[in-house]
Length: 287
Image: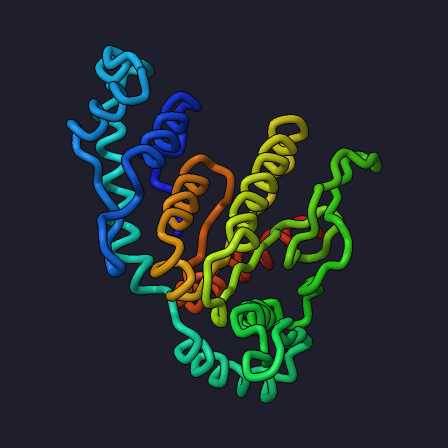
């Protein structure tokens, strides 16, 4: 999923409102199987009063846009894309395992050189890291013999004119063609066996925001552009327990902090296309 062009160039004031109002009004309707909430004009105005903010700001014109109109449009867009698209793309463990078993046949038949890591859980929860394995296979099928770092154990860094210009603060889950001057970086968040929504999962979202800020600063100062993907799955974790974090993923996407967020089943349609684009860029850089 890519950002919506209507909101991609919104100023920091707009995003300050989105974040604070979302927290104050609430991200979801009531109930276990609730949907993402679409705040009304009254909800926003009441929140402003309760937060001791000046309501006049809501109807003032900035960048030729009226703030409350833009907020209403964004909250409707965010709710619709999550309720109608993302919720249907997220897989549970059984669905993911069935898809992995299909791709595993390709891995064996094509003798792909990508790793198939296991998760870090024990006993009956131990096994393949399903989402990571599927991502690796889908990318490897398109890249064929091209180099790709599917499991970086070092920080990614960037050079320009033989000088080191930036080093990221955190290790990424995958890089093409490698961690040195990567064309693309990706992070994978899979929690199929998780029974509660803990701080470790929440921290994963904030880590992606930090990575995005560093990569944006890299582009602003050096003009080096990197494709930055966030790949997530696990219906129970994200949709049942973590809807507010799904909202934040859509926010970070439209803030320009990630190039794309790929939810669950989207890996099967998007990753082959993206890997082809990376191959083209890689070959072009070698000419």
